[in-house]
Length: 601
Image 1 (cartoon, rainbow, N blue to C red):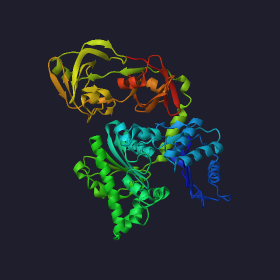
Image 2: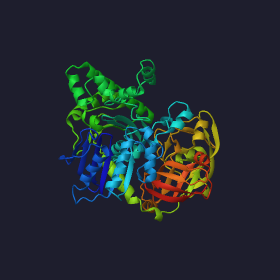
Image 3: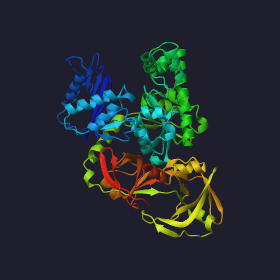
Image 4: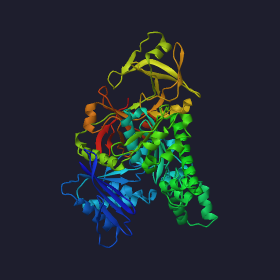
């Protein structure tokens, strides 16, 4: 396919036509200073515009020029970067009237971005009439962050009324570079804990835990977090109140200060370009030196916090204009993190450069326990590939079967060694009844879970024996037991808490293995092909309800030839949703939907 990727801003337009087979850009459009003195270039060739300076007309004119640029390029679909998707969108989606309205309703959360993104969508409908358009949201990747990371500590009713919570941004870039690094390291991303630093004029950091965003520095808006080019990042809210109430600055003046006159620009006094700041710092400019110190201090602090949240780190990743090119910044940060096993090779850091042919470089010393990498981000390619995937899937709706939903109660998986300790040497579990997944069964044997606060009796073991011990509990259970159990896919137990298991013959303490199961769908490869999904894809499930809409977001796809088609949620989720047998719903992956029904077990 040839995918047109649109990034429409308030003062600029970037558009690239990307061949998704060889992943090359075949044409690029750049429009700058749209509302004042517009300049238009296609493949770096200047295009003359002689009309009235009107933003929409200039965008329309420019896209028509790109459309006519090469008759041999047939554009198949259009992918749009949309900054804010709110709670609604957890993955890319085919654009229709409803999606347009939703993006419009989210303007209050991204007043500087969503209006321009929406203008690009509506103009493309006119210029490229009939072509499918896909919205790819900056916020979507961060929909997996847990509730404890989403919420601000303010009055709950106010937060719910105005949609105040942490959303995160740069998701398209962060998802792309983390997956690219996993591919480069030839390691399944579900086994990696990464701290990804996207450092450009806008800057954010993300804890990518086993392929999912677990925490990110930007919040409800892109203003929170790291020091940026012109944005302040974290600031005491009392300062804002003081500027307004005591120093009589207007709201508009404060907004201008925090978004356009702060960050590196405000600290250095010479602008927001890190290259200029580094040069002047070397020449003795104390303001520039302070700007660099504040910048790297904040970044180092966030990295340490995110390593602590994940219980360790395997990869420290730098991307974006500063992250990819500013060796001095990487050095200042890494030198403070040697105690974590993050040891930079200074020669590699200075002399290795990213190129189109080499988009990932390793920078760690041979004694470093952590990989340190710089990665070229490519948001345009990521958007193009997402768009292609959605467009290819949009016609599969009618051929997709129903999927049963199963409510999964708390249960235990044990390795044979632990079974022997609990029940006696050579003991074999006995079958109570078969489960829906082939070869698995609920055993007659039950144990007592003993946590720091309370215990839960008669928890059933599931057979057959596995090669690891794992206890799956609900959120209610974890509070009752006094355990902070992470949400994980089955088998991913590294760094999870342990618990005491009490059996008929003895008591055994396992040192890790207690998790809350990530809601998931088991699929045979034939089913996955029919749905147009792959192992580790994330989908949303809408369950139809006569009284209220029900949506399960962040549902993990698990594919194996040993699986039978079925979706699993835990008892808390089932109770909260008031799910009953016989209801029907829709599973969606972007523009794809498929029917499902539910079954309690």
